[in-house]
Image (cartoon, rainbow, N blue to C red; front, top):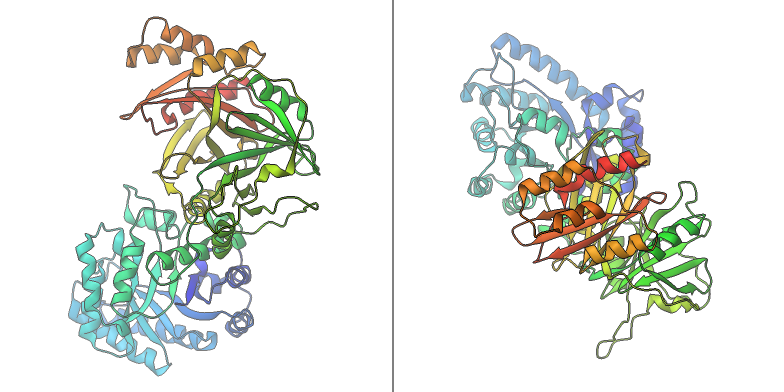
Length: 603
């Protein structure tokens, strides 16, 4: 099915929006009236520009407060409509969106509404235009899709149909059974379908709609279920996105349009309308890669954590540090030197690296070119929305019967002489916490869910001394891959984009002591935090005193307990030592405000 996007969903001038939509792969656009009014281009220029970009103009919108009004008001409305239909003829648009009235003049009279919409449709037909009538969730008298359809059916005009909007339908908390009525609408009378998701929020529906809509798959509404009903009814028109979102309207149009188109690809796949390469869910974290101009601070921190420098890349200035199954690459090459040490790449264990790359490419993830020396392993990599490079790799691969063995990424590294470091109990990488650019948080969640096949938990808001952080974790089924995606409190606070690497240990107290004995510095916590722990939980004799001494934080859920502590920050990176007991599933979100305040104080 064809794809379309409303220009209101993107930022910038109308020309910028059209260009972004075309480059992202959309087939058409909805022209939002305010975008046209603010454009220096004539309707003919816009029509020509769309044609040059390969875009159809699928809808012009909106026309408001048309129906069920006194005769003199309706006469004025017809005059306004005639002007808009003349404009649409110049624009080359053949469908107009009419929203159910919110005017205080509107009467609760379905017969009057049907009669006046029929007259409007007759005028539209004279211009070769169709009228798509939509029920706004906050409409004065008409606020449900089935009510709007009854009025359209009563009018009985061939140029009058309905527009179904997923937000307006689902935001009212429709029971899934309520959607079954969509099947009663003939497919040819569904003139248009607009799609949007939204996070589940308890607020006025108008404000929710105008500020917090997002692309399908980024919120909590069952957009897929609604789409299935619409398709079953016989709708064959475009799938069009209409998203009002304050963040999207401030973000760069190009990446937002790509994110939007990706959401439709995933939606079509979920609804059975398109076949994409199947997700290849990663099975573990093979490595993380730090880039730095000066390796000494990162190397000293890794050494204190009990890591040993065991190998070096045969053709690049990259060292491999390892402890247990936790591996950290330190890259002193020319890339990303401006901000000190930073996390640049993640290696994800994959049972089918090439298949994972095909999935990523089909969902518009940029495949990264690699400079490879002769003999280097052929590794597949794509860029996440924040620029982090994701490598799909195999460690100690075992070939299945009849299949070639996958290349081991470590074959690119040559062992180096090293003193046997005393391990401190780190076993593996437990999770990564990646702070996203302010305007890319929703995009990052959709990317990790759709491209990597990870499951997303609910969003969590975390108080920081200087604002509010938002976090949403994604993981695979067994928790061997966990990534906590976060967004800081301010769009311009780029310096707050610290990333952190959580290392698993079976005894965080012993690991913390060994780290400190090796010269490492742990993050100090205020005494008030541990005083509060004493009030909330009962600990064994001396246990809480140990936590005070080492700066260890504590949490528990219905599954188990969580103990964790933090190193100081090097550049933009710090490490967390974590001990999960009894199946604890969280990330210590309750403790995040204390950690953030302590980190601010330590700067």
